Length: 213
Image (cartoon, rainbow, N blue to C red; front, side, top):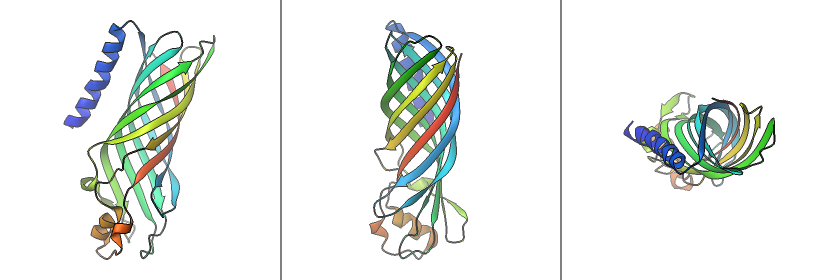
């Protein structure tokens, strides 16, 4: 939890520093739906739904915004059958994530659209795979401490209060610290050709609604 505290403090420090630079901060909350799959070499994956919720601070100049968020995000996906395994592996991960994005917006009265992009860092909180019997097995000990991704998206502010946000989050570093095949071999104690299946990277499409305080 020390890393989670550091992520939170970093977000607050960014907000304070930007406010002192003369940008006007606004605050809000958002929540919504995640649709995720996994990018892994030689393996097809199916999307599963999860959820996302959290807080944000937005520092605005006339056209450009710097926005930092603190999100709790749940992502699920399903890996296709891994030869010589004969079952599909379901994956679910929970993260505490801090995206920091640059937004370009049009200050149109009543309806203000924006596009944005930036990096995000995530702290894995919980990670599970299904075994051959369909039971969930904790695999968090196989994860990296932090996962980096790139966030691309667009949002619309309605009546200066309501937010509709759509984004795509693409992992640039793998979640797992050892090959996925080795994890499955430990879970099922019968998996071979383990070295073939290595990096597991999330790809997540999110739709959120929010409210500015």
